[in-house]
Length: 253
Ligand SMILES: [Zn+2]
Image (cartoon, rainbow, N blue to C red; front, side):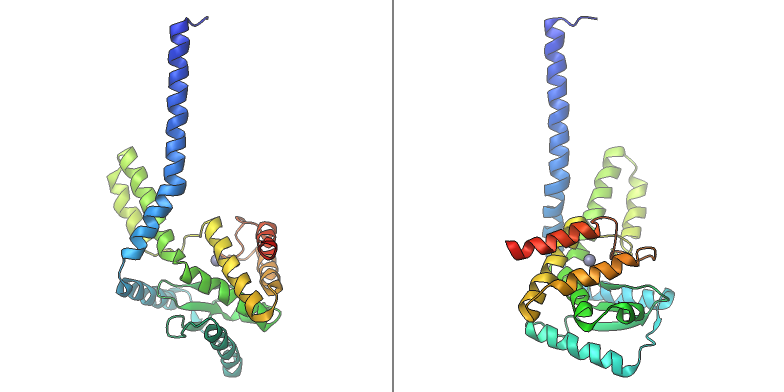
């Protein structure tokens, strides 16, 4: 079939419109959604962050965690280093409280909405030295400083709301919002958020210890445990190699 000149013109316009729409959609997803999430996250009062953080820890304590089995002296040692770390960063322990928990053999650390940092016994036990542990804790402090958890939760919620509105299934919206309000805990962060937290940790390590090597070492150990469910740490996305390169490139900037 040979298209007439007019048909060709229409075809061209249709393709241009489709391309245009894809670009707009992609821009909305990559630029507008994060910007809207940041804006909304900043408007949310501090008390909401507190309440969510506390209830998340409570529900984790009921369902997943046991009290830490680490020796009191070991906990004290880590806590002292961590406090020293925060002091050097002019941050207060009240804003970034540290909690030790036993979580079977899960090697993990993560931040909650209120700034609490949870560290599992297995992580403390398996990291090679204290500087690596501090690197991991700094990464978590970075997530809190950049408000990633709230932004991530809002971002994912907005995405699902938009999708549901577009496809007309409003019932799904409420389900997803409820699910989303398990508050980011089962969500993985975006690649950018991980890199931002890595960069924060690497930069602070550099300032405090004169090297960010501990961050790369800690990541390597975490990725080697990849067969375990190390949610948010050691995801396949970004990969270890990608994160290592990003950290190494920081020093060259
Ligand atoms: Zn992270």
